Image (cartoon, rainbow, N blue to C red; front, side):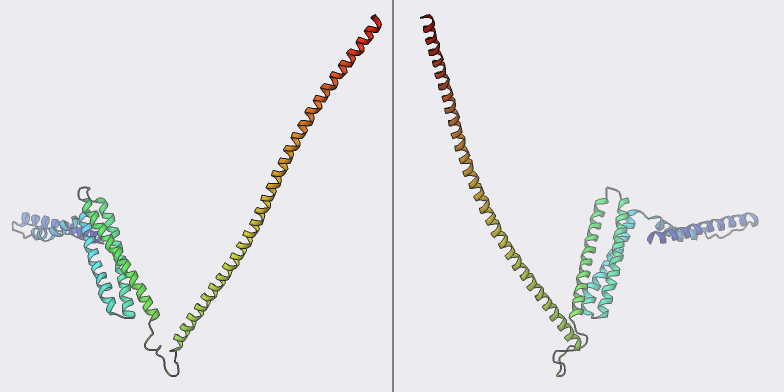
Length: 284
């Protein structure tokens, strides 16, 4: 917004400069023709219009940053006055309107911080750290007041929810429990409480059922474990029996081989005896 205004001022000053130049040329031409003196408004123009032109040209990033920061501080002070002072004393719609105005001003302050972030990009590195510190401080103030506004909105909502309009909730002899709206809220709260209690009971019942199922699963797992242990013992016994049978078979095979060797030796001896006997009979 500041740039647009300065641009307009600078354009207007440029037009006035051109007009003053034309007036000066006209005066000089009249002096040549008539030989008289002409009072020109050039000096007056330059003395009165030079300052706005210089001010319009002073649009450096630091100047714009300072301008945005000053506007931000003014807005924050206005928000502080609304949140700390006005809303505590006001009630009802006035308080709501004050909070709404504070929210609008906080949005404007947020836009100013965004503009400050844009302008800080063009600031020289030699002086940039101090502007960054000021920008961080502005962001911290903005965050703090946003949180304060949110808390006040929540507090106001709770107050509106719990507060009774006028004195409609005052018990009477005809309505010992207060107005109809109060009884409705009370019944609604009781129904909600009963619903919550019923849900808790259902959850407790489901938890007990789950616990019973878990116990049954543990019993089944224990029985299966015992079966597996019995099967392992049976396999161990069978393995032992197989080892014994293998040892017995090896002994039997070894004895059979020994018997074959003895039988072969006996046959050889008998053959030799028969051969000797035949030899003795034939050649004896």
